Image (cartoon, rainbow, N blue to C red; front, side, top):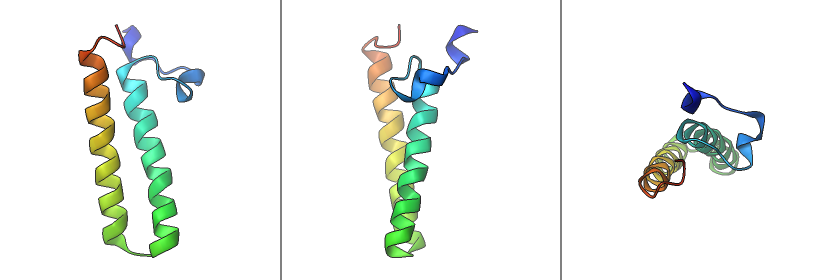
Length: 70
């Protein structure tokens, strides 16, 4: 299935919803490492991770509904 293929250039502009979710979660994990480095607080890292994942899924859902990936 063509929608499940992730290309090397998807980190610039994701070409399908799966790539967008993967890149969103990857950038969220990077941000969580930075939060950990600043605060050393697991609760802050958890909040940052959950916020990033929710924003990623909402953004991908909205773009899919608008037909961006069609």
